[in-house]
Amino acid sequence: MRPAGLKPTGIERRFQEDEIIVSKTDPKGIITYANSVFCRVAGYAEAELVGQPHNIVRHPDMPRCVFKLLWDTIQSGQEIFAYVLNLAKTGDHYWVFAHVTPTLDARGNIIGYHSNRRVPERSAVESIQEIYRMLLAEERKTTDWRKGMAASHEMLLGLLRKTGMQYEEWIFSV
Image 1 (tube, rainbow, N blue to C red):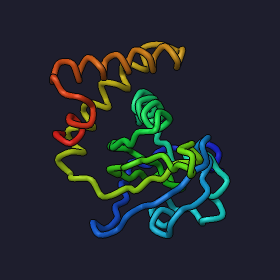
Image 2 (image 1 turned 180 degrees about the vertical axis):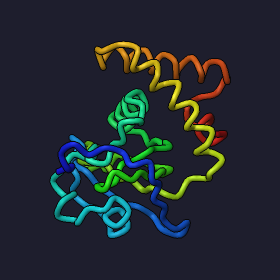
Image 3 (image 1 turned 60 degrees about the vertical axis):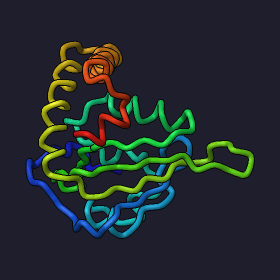
């Protein structure tokens, strides 16, 4: 469980380019597996992560609409790539380029999700930070988080329309 009152420190953690953070969850996002890189970078023991919601590492500066897009995509049976800002147990943060896929049983039913996270390109992080700040500002215009998420989701869709790209094409162009 996330430490009570955990606040971001502003200190960034990094991991090596040849390392991959791996986790698996059940269909509701409860962690069923966390590799040693995930544990080390997030600052949790494996026993502290397994059984917890994956949002234990959610950073408060991460727009909700990105997670809405992620969940909508993977619950439909598709994979997604996304830049994600995470929060370690210490309050430090770390950026990842995530690839999340549904795990299917023999009948094609979703039985969980698998996520591989790599070190993102610094130029991409710089670009995405500005976009995420805009989305987050839109979300925070209202005290109703659902309305804020819907408004920022519309903003993200508007950005995609403006670029003329689908999400996956756009995320690889950042």
